[in-house]
Image (cartoon, rainbow, N blue to C red):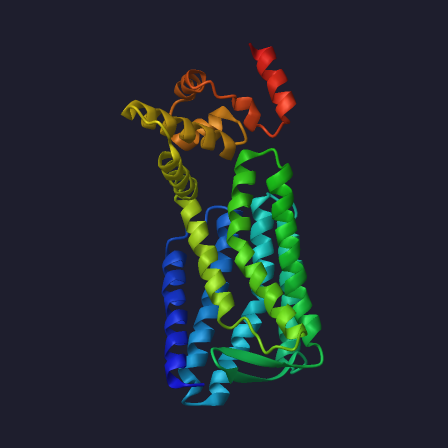
Length: 313
């Protein structure tokens, strides 16, 4: 591997290290969710540190570099189970501790097999990546993170669609958005390997984990809703026709704010008011002013929404 490539890859890994260290120092562990997130962030950090040291030591000692690549792979066996543990904590799963012990125990067994030389036969640095040579139980070891990742996505989708708790549903939406790149990386790399290409997660997985943390940070600061809202307001203003007064623009913006808050809160006006940081009574007056059918955002059919509106009047 060329020295310039090692430098660029090392810098990317270093950025990931700095970001994850900063996040770890700012996590307040006061719930099962924050505890699960801290563990996942720590595993992400180990990924980046082992990757950085693998690139940094490659030109000095290949055996040392390969040792750090081994550390990278072993930590990767724990990352996707840690994601599932976080998902289960988000949906308030009752047997979280049992699930955590079960998932990490399997990861530990796979790690032991890896250390024993049953998973991979070696490494080689190609271009911008590190490629493994599959061992006797390579595909069995890789199947576990894949199954856990797919199951995590299924749990998130289920609760996004069917959970009646607004807070749980919102958390799952954000986590699903953050997790999709990680899942895609894992699936695509495995598909390419099955097709005979020399691909790995050495570069793409750390990038996907940085995206994961970025999205989760936006959510923790309540910024995702506002970023989406600003984009929709901008598009609405740009597409307005026959604008006569400023009141038309301001009225249109206010209506979009209300409808998007209702959509995000599944039609629950109290939650929508919380998103907009206004009293529920104020929001109710605005809904009446703009003749917004709040019930149409509650996940019912259009016909049912019309019927409810008639009953209410």
